[in-house]
Image (cartoon, rainbow, N blue to C red):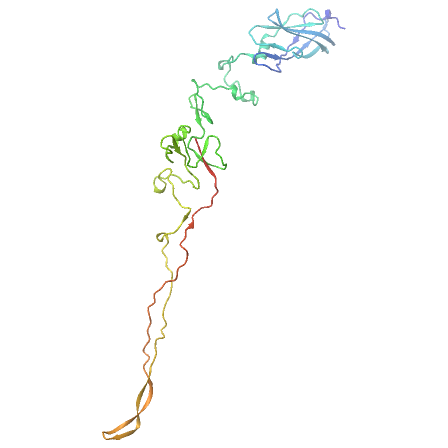
Length: 363
């Protein structure tokens, strides 16, 4: 075994303190990596497994931690993780700390290593609440890439507005006022309506079905729409817009049909009136027959070749013969009438293609 007394009286150790785990808030249990070098008195490196004790002191006298363990030294170099068997547990203070090494029960090597400033930096997360103020952090020193994802939770953040910030309404958003202060604001203001495919309104909304609701429970909505869609009981309630079976149309002050909020109109079916029908006619041609010409037969005397003598003298002889009257009887008749009734006069469907949804309103 290597003779401890042959070690150099001053063994230099490179102390690399790297904090690996932090498991408490008020008191921290830490481990840190340690790298050192051991040489014989003649300067030759040691290669052996040695029992070594490591201690941490407040300043040069008060021991606050120690750990003993076998250390495998190869060609003078050794590396180990201190604090694994005996956790290092202490809070940060301003007192300087030193680090001492004892090999195989020999006297502690001299001088002790001053590690106070390095160790304090390593366990800085054990500082008291609000110890790190904005004046202790250089502007822009903490950038996005220096903070691990999800490392800072919402409950760890506080907002300073120069004065106390009251609790906002449920669902409200925190907005900057542009002067370094903040205020609560509703991302969707009360009174905004929107279509909703579900059957029940989500939190913060009501279905637009004309119900009478409380003026105090829904005070923000009452402030926004008042009694425009109904006064409820006249004192404690007011009515929601009723969109059941209706489509929405924009307000227009220049058209009487749309110049009042809450005004309704329109028909699902409609029967045309005479004044709503376009001007038109139906063509028809009517005449009577012109077959009115006719004749009449009659008998007349026809002078013959003979004569008859009697006491009054001599007369021509007439024979009976058939004859007809003239046919000058053509004429027509005036006719009046209509083309006949068509259609039933019933109402027609007046609906556009549609899909049925709920409308909801923010309160």
